[in-house]
Image (tube, rainbow, N blue to C red; front, top):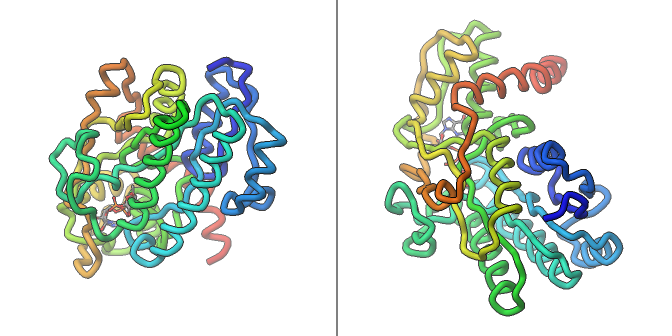
Length: 316
Ligand code: GFB
């Protein structure tokens, strides 16, 4: 990849896309093209074709997605399947039609079977049934992987598919109806502290385990793979360590400064019991994460305090 390449980051307002834009800039990639949803609806195939024909990007980072935590996935399977299929089909096909030299399609660790061996190797894809709470999203992502691999096999396209583990960081979604666990618990712990509440309600049993990667580490891996990886085979991106939801909740409460009790709402789903990626393939290429979980959670809480908490208070 050349520093002068025109790079289209699809989904630049989101947590992952915004981190990719920041990280590309720090690596000297100055020719980044973005479009807001109001300017370009990626679900509209004609609009996407016109955009590619006009802009002719050299490289595409596909970070646009309908995403959400466990409850949002349960509540909106149609949108998780259809919006994601439409956006990725339009962008991947237009990229090929317009001679894009390299495309990075971001997947998700939920593509792997619910009871995959731990840590999960890339070879576990399609080896067993999916976790039902997010199978619509997972099937959309699997279709995206297969489309990239098909363009590579049939037409020689250089379309790569990293599979990130669960992510958190600045620009995460802190809305309790749609958030993932880290953003949800940061918000709940903060509000419980402000309200001097006795307890904080955490969903599920606390026993599921998740591997959590700061989004700046994911973006660092993304740029590394754009520069160093040219295979259609999927490649896991994680930190190689996981924590239980109970340990995570306790750590977040400590960082936020909430000292009340944790209580467990077992009517809420646990989801996959464990999701720890085998990251030996990426490690062998020489990439390492830099942000320890405690540091990443602390800086994300600071970001929340500066960017989300004031707006939330002014609306209450
Ligand atoms: O992060 P999360 O929503 O998604 O939930 P998944 C992880 C675990 O945290 C589950 C528990 O066991 C939740 O029950 N949890 C506890 C909470 N308290 C909370 C809370 O306040 N909010 C949330 N959201 N969870 C998602 C998939 O699965 O992972 C997506 O649904 C995607 O498709 C994403 O793949 C990476 O890790 O279970």
